[in-house]
Image (cartoon, rainbow, N blue to C red; front, top):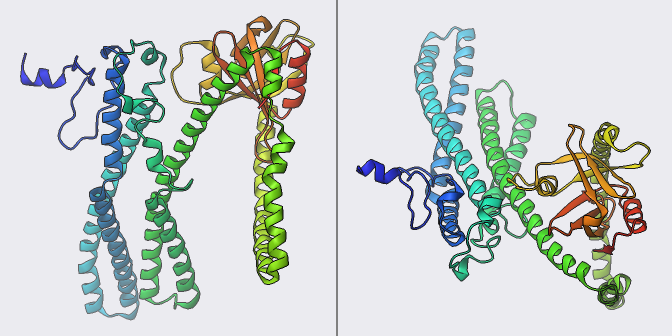
Length: 451
């Protein structure tokens, strides 16, 4: 076997990927799961791949390369626009010498801008490729084929697999954007403010004003690219963390559903008592501040009033978004309801956790597959789920272990019911009519717990 063949072969001892990476390339995408002898080998290479890809994603050298290309592009755009503007003015004024000097310098700025754009394009394409591979490696261990592998000797530092390695935490700091994303936000805001100042106070006929506006617009567009990049990573991180929390909660509630009824009642959490215990100390502290330091209390009241005003300004946008979501959900439900059993009342439902991961059972596809909306109906013998595209799933009530009813604040999200099946799977149903659906399930003999 030649050296090239060895480089492209699968490493049977570690379950390596099908192709070794060439110098300068990001870590390869995952190969077939069947190439790994056991789950331990898969997790070891997964950790190696994620550490390599994430380290490259936060590489200071690549960050400096982006700043260099961005700086060259901003300067080139400013000089190019200034040269063209000055050349037009020189042509109007009939100054041929000035016009000639401006035209001589323009090609150099165009070449510099082209080189900078090529560099930025190469950085962006590599970012996209690397991000695709980060997501592919991260979800690899959750695929059915990966979980069907023999366990093997899994190192302690790789368990649990949904927390090791800590990829998610690298993209989220204090529940916000990464530091580079925050810097991008500051730069974007600064560009917008400076552009406003230049346009309001500057002489719009002056080449320097036009140069400054062009430079600020270019810098703002580049800052927006940085912000959107890290916002996408932060959003993905939040979605993955939410899915992990849901999975852990499902294990807890499944244990409660398998306990006798008396034990479940004894373990129920007194919600109102808990709320009183949490709120009472806060009320006492605020009351003491009002008595002891009236001026501090007045300042706190002013801050609270400002925060309330901001919330009231943002409230219409939130309500409009919620109304659009409800309308889209109702439209999908009306279309899907045509395939439900005749005479059954239906509920408009969003299905599942909406993860883009391969699944091996129909219930898992409805629970974890890509986002879908439709209708659900309950009959004497089964729960019927339908989608506008024609997909259907009927779950016999005898296959349902129980349901968990979650009731968040209505302005935050719709309530949901987690249907736990005897097979060990679950399907989340999110609907504005969650209370009615929970009542109907309980009336049909399904155990319903409050989350």
